[in-house]
Image (cartoon, rainbow, N blue to C red; front, side, top):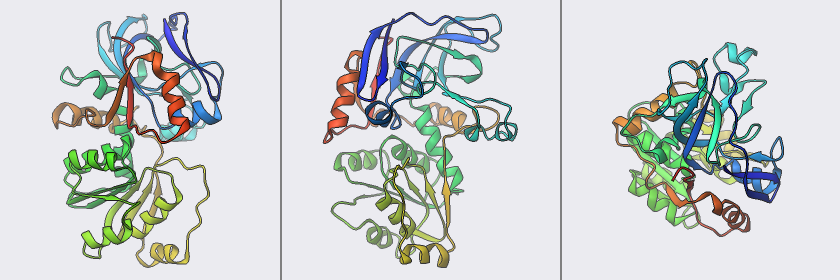
Length: 348
């Protein structure tokens, strides 16, 4: 089969490898759609993976081609998506049902061969059935959608809240959609790319701000009549956006940091004062895996796709064959390349 293999940072190859053999409790999945996650980019271009060579990719959907005797609840032909975390089920956090915090986990696409290939072997416990009216490309974005839901849950989102989202890449755009579908009073989307802002507007954002041309904090306060947002999500990991998120929150607001950051965050006197005087909660959000595994964030995502008309259609900027993966990652590395969710279709 064809697979996208990472050897070292910047060394990504499309190769022919053996179709994986199955271990007890595993199924063989024919991959129909697999996306590039934001975490794949630094893994491929800068830091490398935990093992090498490695087939990358962990946001995917497909069809079960083969099962083993110990698989329960799934059969050949089932349409599925897959939670990529493999918990140990033994540590303190797994026993509490907080699987995202597992001390000794494995992970498809970063520690174990992933899905940027024609086939992948996965544990049946990681499978979720995909409703017939949900497309494979929508199902392949269940992971970023679940992350968005988890961030809103961490921020204790309630119907009638004003939600502000810094960074409208895939997770941010799902946060915009989910907040609107769940009854937000107002959703404010902030980014530096006009293209992403236009997408946010098309999927339901009430207010869109380009933070390169306007002061986002001033605009948030203007549109909320000086009150601020009840829930502020930062999906960028950029210190400037994280600091602006603190300044954009209302009294008793919840600031949720989702974006992976490789930089220090130094808060000014004004920002610390805001946290104290407005009695803000500043919260972290990591992955989306809870009990019963993989958790309600995942099942809620599929429900929104199936029953509420949510879609990744406008979020996907590129639809490509596997062979183009090295070229795309190189374009991203060089910079100045607009993209949102990039999707490959190995099964076509």
